[in-house]
Length: 377
Image (cartoon, rainbow, N blue to C red):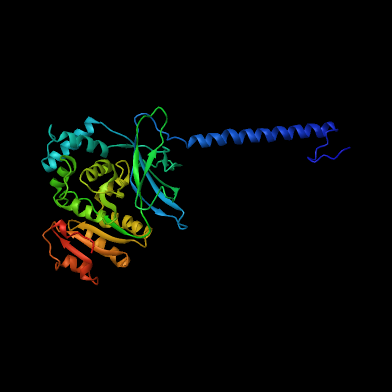
C-alpha cells in the first residue's frame, strides 16, 4: 500500500468515515472564520448610528511615535440626540428670569434656544464611530454613558504628512447618510512653540465673576472676543505655535465655542472642556472650579510634548494664576512664560500673586491689560 502523507487509511471503512468527519469539521471551521471574520471587518467599515443622532468630532494634536515613523492621532467623538423640549427650555428660562432677571426675547432666542438644547442633549451610549485619517480607517471604542469616545490611530509620517500641517479626521458614515462630519488633526512636531490658553475672559468676554453677566454672555448673546487677543495669537501662530485651549466650559458647548474661535481668527489645535451629565453625579461638575478640572488636561499636554516650549495664557478671574504657577513649578524647563489678563484690577504685589508665584522668577509671569503685551520673547 502506498504511503499516505495525511495519515489517513482510506482502505478501512472506519478510517474513511473518520477522515470525512474531520474534513467536514475543518470546512465548517473555515466557513465560520471566513463568515464571522468578514462580519467583523464590515462592522468597522462604517459608523453605527440611529436616525436623528448627531456626531461631533473634535480637533486634536498629533505627536510622533517613539520610532519617528508615524503620527499618533488622538480621536475624540461625541454622539447625542439634539433636544427640542419646549417645556424644559421654558423651565430653565423661567428659573434664570427669577434669579437673574434675564428674559428670552425674539432678539436673543436664536442664541438661547440652540445653546440650552445642547445642554439638554440626550447622550447616546454604545455607538461605534469609524473615522478615516490620511487613508487609514479606525474604529473608536463604543461611546460611554456621556456619549463620548476616545481612541487613536497611527498614520505614516511622510512627505504627504509634514510637521506643522493639518490632516482631516472624517467620520465614515453609511451610504444613506449624506452628512459630512470632520475635524482637523494638527501634526505637532517634537520641538517648537505651543500655547495653552483659557477661553472665558481670556479670549472670550464672559464676565465669570458676575453670575448674571455670565449667564447672559453664555446663553443670551453672541460670543464676543476680547479686543486684540486674536491679533496676539496670530503673531504667535506666525511663529509656528500650536494652540491648546483648556477651559471649564462644558463639552456641550464645544460646537458654538469652536465656531466662535474660528470666526474670530483664533487657530485651534486642540480643545479640552469639562465633562458633565445631567442624569448622574457628574452634573455637579458644573460647580467644579478650574483648579480641579484644568490641571489634568494641562499636565497631559505638557507630558505629551516634553521637548516643546510653552506659553500659558489665562486671566485673573478664577484660578489660572494658581494653576499655571503650579504647572511652572513642575515643568520649569518647558514653560517659558505665563500671561495673566487682568480683569479684576489686580496688582502684581497683591497677596494672591505673591503666594501663587512664590519662589518663581518674576520675569516668568506677566499681568497684562493690553493684549499687545502677549508675545514670545
